[in-house]
Length: 209
Image (cartoon, rainbow, N blue to C red):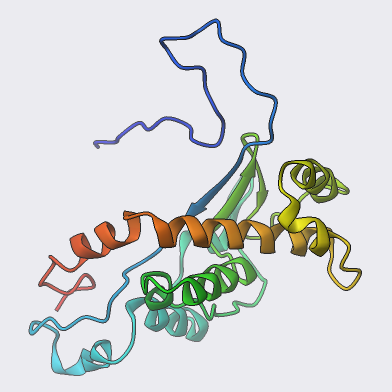
């Protein structure tokens, strides 16, 4: 078995050239996204019985198969000390579309991230100073979102007005802010465009012909 050990990007570390330099005391918010395939296949190797792949994203097909019980993902299982116990919570398919995320359009990217944040499954996780605060069946502790928001408001005035929205919980306001910031970063950077160009190099359909 081969594995690649990557640095923990949920926290900031001291630069090796400046080990004595003190670290700034700011909240470090990091977001993990599994974007999935950002295109609809056009591979000529798709068998006739699977031609639905020409009309829908691989992700949406997997969501439907999971809803029907034909596919089971590992993240749906809970592990206890003695055995693997199947999660009894009914599966809710996500409306997330990878096509939106890879579109390059800021509005569509925001929609994609919002859909990911509603049904996170194993595709969207948020960390604060190295500790996961959002994920499938994971939410911030009591008052944790408020504390983070209070810190962010002092650093960023753009969320000050939303923070006083009495119709939204602190968790929702924090997630909305994170999705808004991340969408702007993804739209500006070349990351998704480069990733999509690599994905499109595969002429054999990823799920097999």
